[in-house]
Image (tube, rainbow, N blue to C red):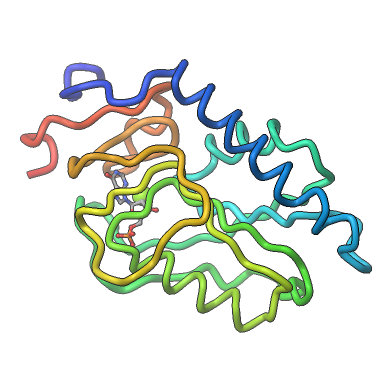
Length: 187
Ligand code: IMP
Ligand code: MG
């Protein structure tokens, strides 16, 4: 597996530290908002985008000191490719009782922005009380639609990266760090 990697961009230690900072930041921002979150006993509602966010969400949620709720939503546009197809398939099993909730979408990486734009639209239709986006990585060089994350872990260079949940053709998700792939693997 490691022979396919080009460069380690974010080490285990830097991921751990940055994710803890993001969790502390979210805790501060939502402590007051969640104090009067109405009927909902849990706040904020963290919605992890499958599958890439599963490790990030596991670590991030443990550094948020609030009674948060965790759900998952599936979205895919890449298939077995390294570029977006431009069409986003959203899992339809998501239940809709998010009206009036403080929702944070948790994404592994913002690349073209197409996936997040579709997800924002999908969630907004259910009228959450607030909606923010938290992305571990932001690759602004490749943006096709105007969208920003409210919380970003790291700005990522314009390279295809894997590890810490991110895959190429379903591989490398279990690497504990984030690395760029050798171009010959995906070209
Ligand atoms: P977007 O719709 O182009 O912003 O793509 C977002 C999704 O594409 C992410 O949730 C990832 O699953 C995938 N993706 C984008 N760039 C990379 C990358 O460098 N490595 C692995 N997956 C990526
Ligand atoms: Mg993916």
